[in-house]
Length: 424
Picture (cartoon, rainbow, N blue to C red):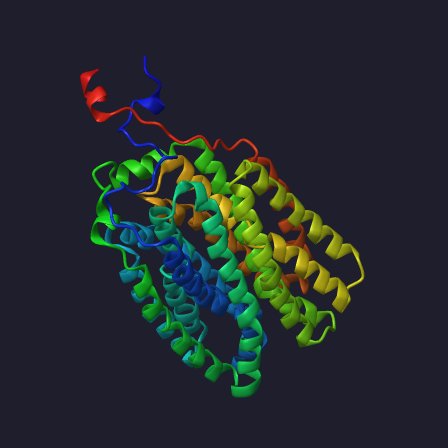
């Protein structure tokens, strides 16, 4: 009896570059344009924690109100990810990126104008979350997967992730300056205008028609979803990514307020977020490069374990500007370094035909974790007056993610030809 894994349509996950006859974009074009888009999209969102204090003080809201909107943003991003990924796989990335760019700008404008918690959740949460699903990693990585040779794919994903990290480093001081110079509302409107630049840049990722659709006959969307969720490694990858979302979004949104509560100047928080972005450039690029040479599951396990260790040390040393900067630098190296190996595993195992969609499903798990991390941060702070419980939850989850990534199998799926299946 043929094993279940082989009783499937013919499709080789690890040899998934487009056919030679299919038009392809140059790697340099894909990387430059993809990097610029991720820089803008991720750079804008990375500084949202800087708005927590001014918005809640000006509107008279609790931290939970702001935190809940950010939580909805992350959840909406995750829920919309598989759909935007499927659309990008089917129709090409440009249309999705252009729509996401316009929605991002609209969300930032309405975020500035919202006067109730419900309106703020709808704009900062729902609209911007959907916009981010169409302007960040899943869509850009789909283009990379279709137009970069498998031998350099993990490295290329690391380059794109490093660009997003540079955007975080670049944009946090800019956003802090905009708030100080123009006020928080005008600063959001200016960022909205900046988000519109994603559309002209996305022209560089407009794929030839055959590149976007040439492999559609190989596997249906439903078949791809069923296959992925039936694989234990895919389930474990999603579990680990849940932890990633919990940790980074809790820290990114709540660290400025945590430091302010302990008497540190606002400049320390700004510097910490900027350092996370700067060192993340190194971390994501290194992770992408190492993922080309070593088992990605070991890289992921090591990253999660080191995050927990860094948090434990941070909580047990005196809180000073220097300890904050050291922690930010260490966490920066580990921040989004999970992104290239995680997406490279998906491409390696399942191929690139539905890469944006499957990457969207994995990212959905990440965003569920993000929702809980940012919301629990505000909820437990309002209940206890402290972030301590959430910090230790983040530590425990990091140890769990270390364990669940170890058994992941990176072997490409090999499916029997459809003709052979019919002959049985």
